[in-house]
Image (cartoon, rainbow, N blue to C red):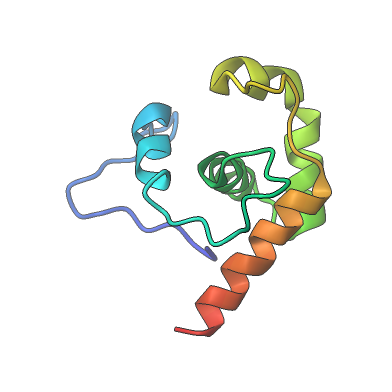
Length: 107
């Protein structure tokens, strides 16, 4: 997730690249969650979406991603309709980032 590349038929305007958040979430829901079911509070797709949004916002590490998400908590809860009415803390975000890096290294 170091960079974002647009396809040849995609345009980025002065106001940015616009996409449907629900279509992105639907795509992320297809990712298989390797975590054990005990203690899961947030869907993997939700964590991945929050990480992706923070990465687009310029954050590069789990701490920065967690802070970016926390600073936008009210808006993210409302837009994403999070059932817990709060965003995840650093631990699930960091764990998801760690899992992502491990899988990327194993490829």
